[in-house]
Length: 82
Image (cartoon, rainbow, N blue to C red; front, side, top):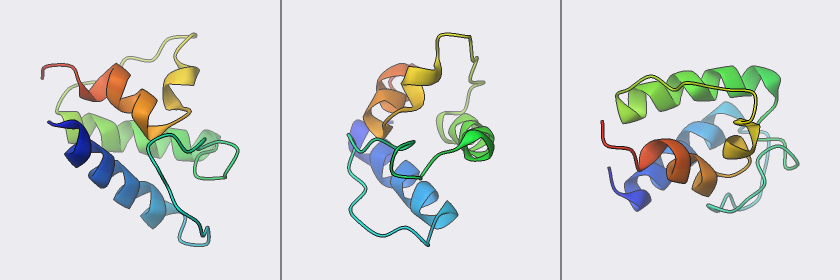
């Protein structure tokens, strides 16, 4: 999946999960500090990502920074060949 398609689909998902938030959600928006992600939202986002990229998302202790931005998620999980 190309980068822009990944961004668009993930952006739509995150905005749909938090319609109470306003503002522009860009690829480099800090998702935790802006409220788009929290511990519960992370679990839902991982499930969405697994469907989006058609492969399991393995999470290790050092993977939290991969969920700071949409851009980081693509670089870590979306760019991988399924």
